[in-house]
Length: 456
Image (cartoon, rainbow, N blue to C red):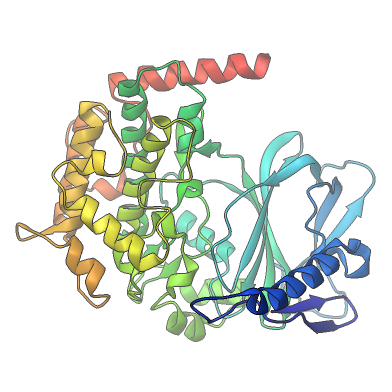
């Protein structure tokens, strides 16, 4: 294990020692070196942040006023407009961002090669989310993806208040910032905040939210954009509105309708390099609990089916967490060691005729049951045969997209979930949460509960 420390004046590499053993029957001789390594690591991490510079300060207790100012160099007429400087200010201004105590949003870190921190902040008196990301320079900047989504008029995308690049290239990484509207909380937290509702009403809300998430995924895919890391944090709800944030892992398809040349010029990335790297994705850049079965076993090619499968697991995981006491990490199988083991567990559960109970969802509404049955068939059945085991065994197994089947499902959703008459061109019409009578009542009730909670 090595600790690499970056400072404003340079960088240092500290060899801490071994952090693993290979013996199947380890004894104290194996554990002692590991113990020494951990002690050294804790010593370095306990040093005050001023020893290393502000980027190494990951304490939960930093706050104040910060300004992200466009970098304007009078000596350089070609100064890139997306580059910014970060200034600390003692006083609040119209352009400053206020970070208060308990500002940081906790999230599970599973990615390799990139890091992101989220903060709940205030900007011009309104709540917002500040996201700071370290991203390899040969990957797409998240801001570029949001620009593409906005240009394609994709529904259920959060509004971007401001964005820019703080560090253009430091040892192969860029530092990017995004100031995003506060879109609410993950689905499971939204449901847990209103447990006075019955399980039928809660699962109807989950069905409505999942439906909108899939519609957003489909619309983005139509424009040539894949999300590639749908998790519980990627499907959020606020005031009856669903939003899909966190597009930092997204990819542009080769035949996408996005003007990649313009985006590359604006956001300072190599179009050809990104296009080559974004054709595939290492399995380490996803959240295993919600990853599709093919990705868990090492499949590199992605399609819309993988994103839909992740949304499917997010919805079921939310209902599962409502029905267990005390709450647990995730659905049945999440505690299984290794991604391949989790993939085989998932494949076994999805192949069972009582698959809902197999993953821990004991009760749900008829609407939610219909929706998950419909998507289970879309995801795991081809030509009348269950393919879950094939997906878990063979990373190269080709699962067809079946886009016409997905479009029919979206039409049925409009009628059964949102109470709309079937219309054509499903990817271009945005549906709002709560158009069906049951889910509408449940969501309105949840909004009243949240208002009372804020007043208290």
